[in-house]
Image (cartoon, rainbow, N blue to C red; front, side, top):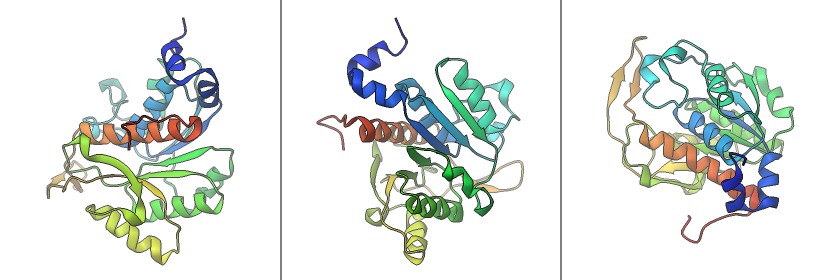
Length: 237
């Protein structure tokens, strides 16, 4: 029996075939993106392109699926690829160890069915949304998940309907300047705590835990499944 047999039974043969043919780009392989990629692999998505410039560090090991001790110091995308291929032998994985900027727009010229944008750099988020819209590529963006604890408050809405998230507020303001169309986002309605943690590089970053980024990544994967298979639940958002 295939490891996907029960998933295929739940979705149906035709819907599962659609997932096997999907090519999803996950930009950002951190707490959110790594969970999104792993969830997509478990659901049977056939091809992933992982994009991230960063390396695994002990300070972010609390929320990354690929942060086993022996992988600390590796690039996030290569560590995630290694982690996934240990389990999924029918998964095609491409990696780009780059910071998304104007110099790498050609990444979005390759065939891709959806972009999951899972980074926290404002200008890069805007650029990814703009370029995806220009190419008519469906995109789902993750907003702030740091300084939060309750995974049940993570949900999907659209950028111009979002509220209560400082990152969403900044992104909305700049998106209007860029004249971007409204776009789906994953947001937490939990009021973030005001905590800043100094890491080994002397940067101050938000506090974080496993629960909320993991919930966001899994919800992003659900959005992919729902979008391309027309599957949903009566109790879903």
